[in-house]
Image (cartoon, rainbow, N blue to C red; front, top):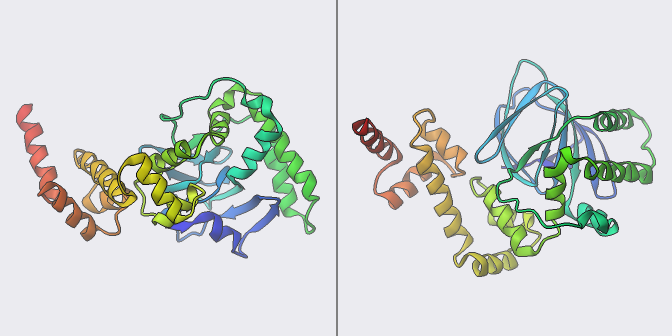
Length: 294
């Protein structure tokens, strides 16, 4: 999978500004891009300027169109581009450490009970309002300047935006996620794994998302889950694939891709080793069982 943040940061194809730990980008999607697996070690806002695109999490799809805003948590997604119009967006990448430092300076925002985010998805739709629209326009203007604007001003404007998000209950899901970043390392690791197990990421990528070295990640993972990351990931991917096979629409190759296997032949091999049936045989068997019950 392509690391979207690193690819944009290292590219000369986009207008962008780096401010402190933030990265502001005017992103134009390549025309030849279609269905695509991406991940990012930083969270990001996407303000859609034109066109439309789908971000897909493990369980849901989000079609976004011109004028809409989404927030994508650090981690992986599948995306799909529509070719009718060129897709353009303003991306703002925000690392966890920036949000945590902001909350340490504004401790009053942390008051109240910690919310359970186990049901929250990795992609959040952001309610549009005049403040967000104004902020998007200002960033668009800054990116068009030949000289880089004052960094401190840009940082303060973004922190002002965060404060405004916290003051509006329409953005509760988003601010709950920001607050959750201050929880302990075990909670943080469990959320990363639950939201990203169905992607073809390396263990080093998972460790990076959890802000750990590979050795520390493996040790913490075993202590928390009582198994290895590789065994846990294989089990979760196969279980997801098994449930997908009960649906008639996705083909075997699509299921293999969407469940994070290296390729279709690898998926068929490990599925047969687990269930003593190929994916197609499993689907046919359960399709007959379902029909006989009708």
